[in-house]
Length: 189
Image 1 (cartoon, rainbow, N blue to C red):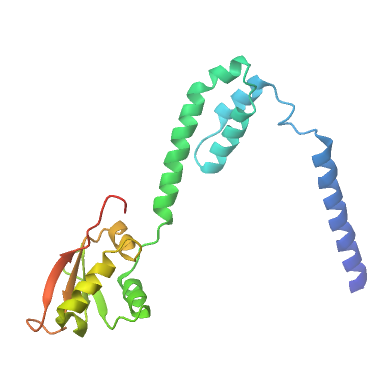
Image 2 (image 1 turned 90 degrees about the vertical axis):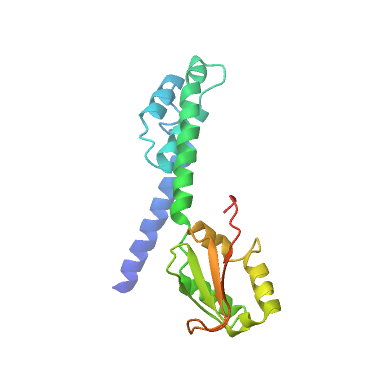
């Protein structure tokens, strides 16, 4: 009984695949048979609420023959599609950038061999990093140089609104080294 169902399922899949191939080879697609005026109207009807609708509109605009009147009439639409696509991509990119948590920052530095702890400062734009190594000026300078480097986790810190880092050599108040430094966030973050 199970073999019979398997055979039916395989034959059904083969039939569906064959139908798709025949349809694609036939060339009887509504898109291909549209006139330039229909393409222009279809492009204008797209909602442009998301990148997929902008892509569909671009497909219609791209199919307009260069020597048609509709091609010239689509100049404003091309400009609007460019602007909308850029705005949607910018929005998608800003939403796609995950916020780096302070624990992620701490974990990344520990994975690189640093013995430290990180926490949020009272200042919302500052991270506090505590390590016994920071009592040594050379190690502190080397750490700051690394953190300010172009290809480190600092880029994520800057994107997330942090612009300063406080280095402490002891978690006890009023004991040891305790200074705040700029992350040197530039406009490229």
